[in-house]
Image (cartoon, rainbow, N blue to C red; front, side, top):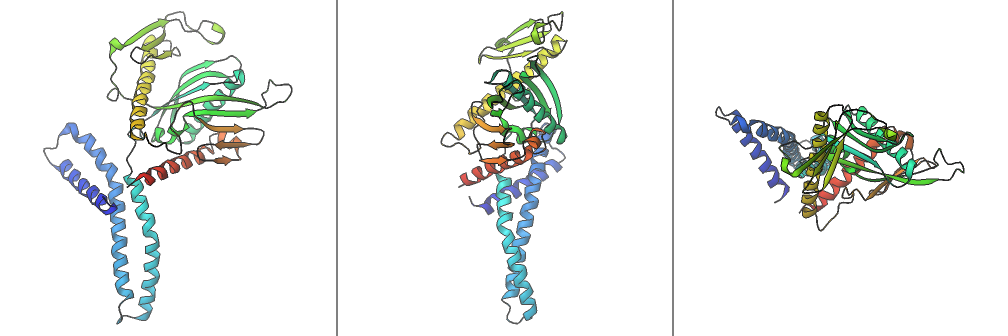
Length: 357
C-alpha cells in the first residue's frame, strides 16, 4: 500500500469516527475510546489536507508556467512559487509517514523509574543518587510530577536503590530509552591518590500499568509484612508496616517500606509489580516483532551499557548513537538531557521508517 492509499484510509476512518460520535445512539461505553482515536487522527487529517492543498497549488502553478498565452512576468512568478512548493513536498510527505508510524501504546503512560547502584561500591551508590537527582530535575523542568516511592540509602550520601513515579504528558515516550547501564568515570572524593575510578548504575524506566492492562490474581501473590528499617538497621517504625510481595509465577519480588501505613505500602508495591509485569509482556511482544532486527538505539535491556559520564573530560557519551556532549554539568542538572532524548527518539523513528515497505 503506497502513501496516498494509507492517507485515504486515515481520512475515511476519521470521517467514520466523526459520524459515529455524532450519532444520537452512540455507545457511551465506547465513546471515550473512539473520541481518543478521533483526536489522535485529527492532526494527521490536517496534515493530509495541507499536503493535498500543496499538490493542487503545484498543479495550478504548472498550468500557469506552460500557458503560452499568459503574461511572461506571471509565468516567472509561477515558476518561482512552483519550485518553492515542490521543495517542501518531500518534507511534508516524510512528516506524514512519521505520523503514520505505529504508536507505542505505552508512550502516553506515566513511568516508574528505578535506579540501582551497580559495580563500584560506595562510588556506584553515589553515582546512582546523582542519576536519580538528574531525572528529578529533568522532570521538574518539564513540569512533570516526581514522587519518590522507595529509597535505600547507604548512609554516606549514596543510594543502593531508588524508585519514583513520574507523571505527566508523554513521560514514558521521552524516558523509555534511558533504560540500561550508565557508567561514570571520575575521581571519588574518598580517593586520596586522585585515581580515576569507573563504576556503574542501572536505570529501568517502566510504563505505569493500570489494572485493565495487567490483571493480577491474588492467589499468585505471597505477601509478607515486617518492620521497616532505615540505614544502618535503626528502627523506623515499630509496627509491621513494611510489605514484601512475591509474584509466584514469575518470581518477581517487590518491597515497600517508605509509608507508615501497611495499606499504602501494599498499594505502592502492587503498582511497581504491575509495571514490571506489563513491561515483561511488552518486551516479549517486541522481541517477537523484531526478532530479526535490533533498533540502533538498543533494546532497553538492563544489561546494555548505554551511556558514559566522564567527569575529568567533562563529557557524556551515548554509545548507541555515538553522540558526545561536552557539557556534563548541564546534563547532570537535567538541562541538556533533552539533547540525548531528542536524538534517541529521532534515531528510533529513522530506524522504523527504514523498515517500511
